[in-house]
Image (cartoon, rainbow, N blue to C red; front, side):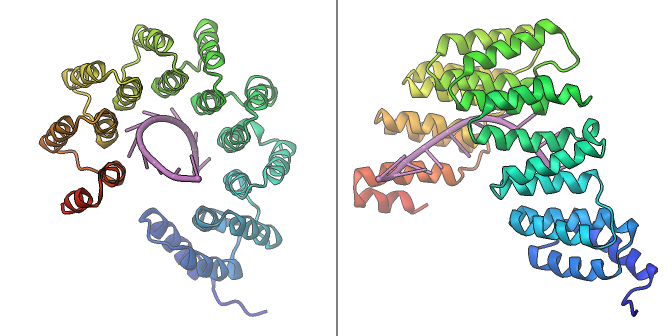
Amino acid sequence: MSRRFVPVDRRILEQNIKARYHAGDIGTEDALHLFDELLQCAGSSSIRAINYLVTTVGRDSPALGVSLFNRVASANVAPNSMTYTILVDCCCRAGRLDLGFAAMGHIIKMGFAADAIVTFSHLLKAICAEKKTSYAMDIVLRIMPMFNCVPDNFSYNILFKGLCNERRSQEALELIHMMVQHGGSCQPNVVSYNTVVDGMLKEGEVDKAYTLFSEMLRQGISPDVVTCTSIISGMCKVHAMDKAEEVLQQMLDRRILPDAATYNCLIHGYYLLGHCEKVDRIFKEMSRNGVQPNIVTYNIQIIFARAEGAQKLGKYLIL
DNA sequence: ATAGGGTTAG
């Protein structure tokens, strides 16, 4: 049989793929061509380069990613655990959770479960997206340990987000307390607290959110820009603009730099109250601090300009 | 290859 590449060419191709992947220099079309080219000469050393290509294609089109996996499986190249992780992610994002479970079952059967922490994360996220967070909790608390796969902050934080999306932030709080009291190796981090504080604020539980924020500080976890923006957002939603400004000031004192999301909350809050002069002040402060308005900032402006009539729309759009 | 915050619409 004729082969287009001798092993040296194959190695060059693999290195080329790796370099271009890391440079963010491969589009989906390129990746598909490179995949065809590589598969013709692939050997067992090619799996890493193949993973880069399947990742690239799968990001754009998960269903296509799954079909590439099938071609890898029928060529003479053994998938590794990373390949399976990419496969599970593609299945989940293609809306085929059933295939994701099947792939996970295969991983468990091969005895790779203990190293499959990231793979589990993809699956957990998809389960939570279907509002079946209770099931995801069972996987984290019971099934993963059964396979010696120790849940990490990613596993737990996916649960927190899922519970909050189902308006079950109280249960998320109890899980945080359980982790702290149990004193295990995985303790809630800044993302865990941010997620649950935000969930409580969105359920209108301002006092509970504040209590949890205090607990976070007591645990020695430093708030960051996301923590503060969540709290500012919560304050703006109940029109407590003075409180929101207070938190902003505390941020600056603590040298936590506000970003566009932070200012967007305040701009939106003042617009809702019709305080246009305050909006102007926030804009000036924003540019003084070197924060660029983003697409959301402009959307807020356009929505409110539209409410004020076509004349002002013209004024706002001339930047 | 995996986790958190900001706008709208119907």
